[in-house]
Image (tube, rainbow, N blue to C red; front, side, top):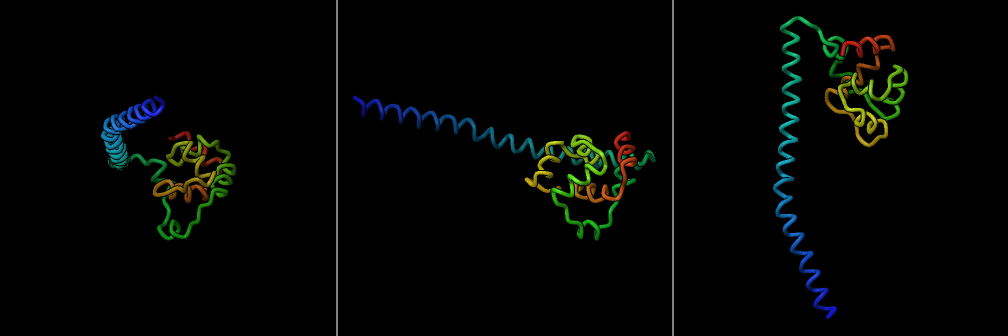
Length: 144
């Protein structure tokens, strides 16, 4: 009797997995598509905001402070300890530093822990922040 019970149990488990996979796989694909769509929309919104500020004549902190030469970006080396030291030198919390860079506070935390590295605009902003002081950082935070 134990053999039939075991066989039936294994069959039920296998069928349940098949049903679950049949339902979940299409949803995983859809979630991936939606994430990509959100990423593209955020990028488009950022570009449009920059164009609007150019047209209206307003200068945003991004354009004012965060301009770094391509050579400087290429040469710069960003380590987790540098990010921590920079944040502390500017007297910023993780959340404030994240706002200033345009990232999530969890992302900044993972940079500081060495779990990930800043890329693209975030990298450029961190490099640019090395050249400012506490007062300027606080001023930029007020404008954002």
